[in-house]
Length: 283
Ligand SMILES: N[C@@H](CCC(=O)N[C@@H](CS)C(=O)NCC(=O)O)C(=O)O
Image 1 (cartoon, protein in one colour):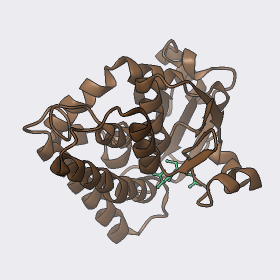
Image 2 (cartoon, protein in one colour):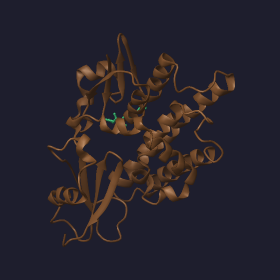
Image 3 (cartoon, helix red, strand yellow):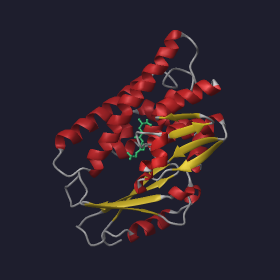
Image 4 (cartoon, protein in one colour):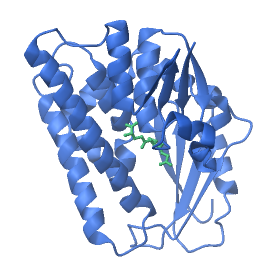
């Protein structure tokens, strides 16, 4: 059976969506990057770049999400546009646009928005600007088409969807308002049974994350202190059923109570996207 080295982040998510769409039998092998499992000798033999996703299909090993999507699409003959030279060129162009533009800019935007030390405004602005610019291009492309390549749902949509799930985290909670066509497309794909199944397929051993941070008032860039924790004992497949009250309870337990003043900003990775909420000091 096809082996799928996976965690819940954007690049593996693209492949998970394909596997659910195509109903190919596959075995999930969780790789917990937070524990550094991607650097094990065994994993490096599969991907010298030490990143997920990777698939092993019989004797064939493929790493890098775009390569995997192309491999699987060609293997199954599914989720490809019509076989004209222009359609093929569009497929490659947009796939590379996601791989070399949307993905890397979004990834760096996350780093500088959420994790970098304060004061790196040039880098913060550059990656926010470029990430937004790329999503704006996708939005324009979708203004006159149902899917990114036209009326056919393809691996390009899967590739972009993997990142679009993270838009509020990458560029901010209100960002969707700027891109109505992208939102329409995102909701269309998210409503597909395979998209729901893919969320449910996330390995229980990766758990459900809840994180919190405190920032002093007025300091909007780097958090003073962050805490992340897996909610132990809760499987991702059960996460949809978690009440907000329970999530808030887990968030309250995160050990940053004595730091700073102001709101504790929290997030929770639910199967249907990241939920955000604030806890006030009295909570
Ligand atoms: N170009 C690669 C990028 C893969 C990638 O960045 N994977 C991330 C998860 S989305 C990862 O494995 N991060 C772990 C690390 O950087 O150590 C692809 O598209 O597959």
